Image 1 (tube, rainbow, N blue to C red):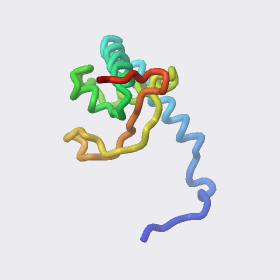
Image 2 (image 1 turned 30 degrees about the horizontal axis):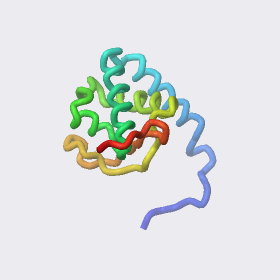
Image 3 (image 1 turned 180 degrees about the vertical axis):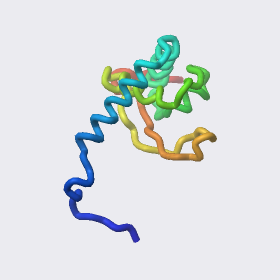
Amino acid sequence: MQLQFPEPVHGAISVAAGEAAKTDGMARAEAHTPVDWATACQNGIREMARRGVPFQAADLIAEGLVDEPERPAMWGPQFGIAARAGVIEHAGVVPSTRATVHRSLCRQWIGAAGQRKVVA
């Protein structure tokens, strides 16, 4: 049985501090991402978005659309950029297909309605 609180315990959790730390971390990761890798990643995301099927970061590598990044933290900002640009939208959370992460949960994405094309 898991202990559950009906409300956040005041002083124990700061949603604002958590969001600020996330934003800072994403900005630092983006700033240290090589431009050529970021460009290849954005192109890969757009290609997967056009296909109209749910995908995750590992699929970009499996499809040969982008190489493994220097650091895993480089993925998040790229998917965030594509989502804010209306290229992709969140499509749930699924186990990762990457063997190195032991099927931990990761975000799944799909091309936004205007990005999808029927692939025969």
